Length: 72
Image (tube, rainbow, N blue to C red; front, side, top):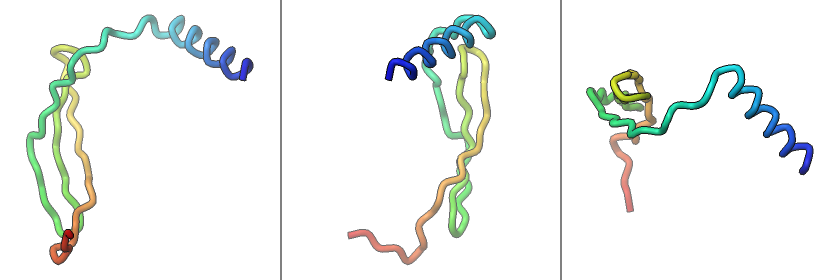
């Protein structure tokens, strides 16, 4: 266990030296901009802020339920 903890500390320190400190955590302000429903899946286009004022777009492909699927 000590070896693992030592390795984790080394990786964290090395990463911080290479890329600098991590930015402060801020709200993502995510929102769905479009939803496309297909027979077997749903596509959701989303946009979120990785940092204030810096927007990231993404598409989430989610499995859908068959039309004849019944819930109990």
